[in-house]
Length: 87
Image (cartoon, rainbow, N blue to C red):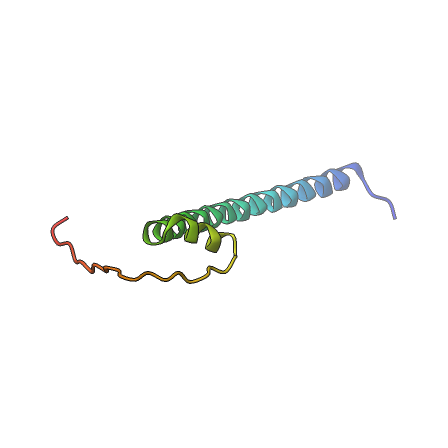
């Protein structure tokens, strides 16, 4: 079987176009993954911020490190539940 130069050029052109489409597809997928990763990072940051605002620092650090936190006993405590309107 004899392959001519134009046939080789045509094959190379098709192969190059396929490769370019594949690269574009990969870049698109990577960009989508990057955006999803940034959303996850932002969600984690907000969750950490919420936990840090609700719990004592040493408790938040232990929980973030995956450790268990021993309960503490206080003779008296005050808990304030509030609904701030108009801010």
